[in-house]
Image (cartoon, rainbow, N blue to C red; front, side, top):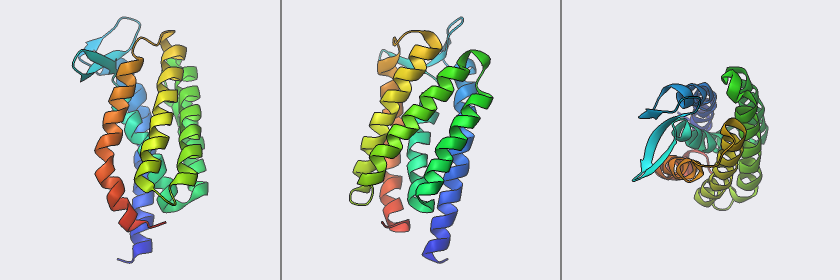
Length: 181
């Protein structure tokens, strides 16, 4: 296969996975966890003594996948992913989470995009880590505050999403070969 064909396939697979993770995260936060709070999120352990709403891992991966979409398919596809993801987030979120999910998604992905875009030409791994770190912090703060009126699970949210980003780093290094700058 030619490199452009591989790049296109990886980009389209990342776009599809990115959009698939959004409804999964929205569903998980109220249905999957080791502890489900009444009127609140279902939680999973992300570190000893630290819990986070269960959608944390899928959103961490989504932040990285949006970067892959942009790297493989271009700037416009990165923006399309943000717009489509925000719309999908609003459409699939449970009633109580619609505003929190949509606002958190739009703000975090836009911040991720703003940091990733200038850095990715020179230092791809740094671009992914820096943009995801900012995006996941914004996503966590906005979502928790709007959805539950509290930042109680903020540390868990950040740690859980950082795990997803850390796991992606070997794949990002491979991406440099598939989609050079």
